Image (cartoon, rainbow, N blue to C red; front, side, top):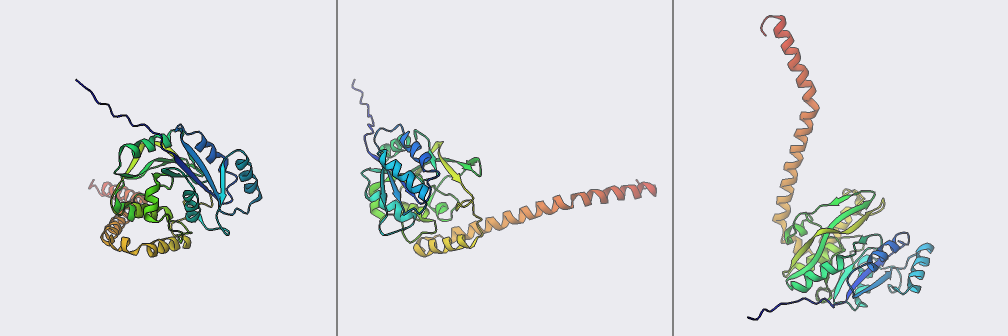
Amino acid sequence: KIIFIHIYIMNTNISIIIPCYNDGKYIREAVSSALSQTYPHIEIIIVDDYSTDPYTQTILSQLAQEGITVIKTQSGKKGLPAARNTGIAQASGVYILPLDADDKIDASYAEKAAAVLDKHPDVTICTARVRLFGLHQKEWKQPDSDYANIVTEECKILSTSMFRRKDWERVGGYEERLTLGKEDMVFWLDLLKDGGRVVTLPEIYIHYRIKSNSMTAATAHSPAEDERQAAMYASRPEIFQAHVLNFMCLCARYRQEKARCACLFSWKLMAPVFRLEWFLRQKIKRLFGRA
């Protein structure tokens, strides 16, 4: 009796791409988390998007002297999507793992994500559970992802998720016009448009820093958020138009939830008045012998 055992040998290079613009205060933490990966075949590329902060310039110079690859975007500041594209274009990895300069990843993240992509060709994106740190300390819980709820942003796949370089090439990289944000969401939509699965590892491997000036810390009703939404829609109108019904259903659920919350708030606000009215009514009944 012959038993065949299929062993997945992971010897694929992974490129961790770290864009940086004036994030010298945090980038050593990001680099340290990348260097601590248990996966044996890692390259780290920092893309300096023409940082103007002298401290950041000093830190990047030190990291380069320590053997970390540091490159610059061409002809001045280009923005986050162009910085990611610049780094990936020079990367040797079959798998790409973007990492923002102010975030961190756990040591086994790259190994676990690469194992999923190695074993499952139909998986396009491998991500993990996320913990917020900085201004907020909690897990960032997300629902299970499908294409429709990624379009409506009910599910947000963080940029620090692993994908294949060949898929980046297939869709033409990140949309460089989206310099205000939403570039990662549009990139995921591009990757998944013709199929493919998203797998979320069950452990918390991604640590996302919340800062006072971060996009996440900003309110969703700020003018900048409106601009980001408009730019995102303009970049892929055919995708968003194809999911109008999903947006309508989401708006209907939002209205129902808003009405429910308003009703609960009104009840809590008026409950003391109702209790007082009942108490006085009982007093009056007893006074006239009707209780």
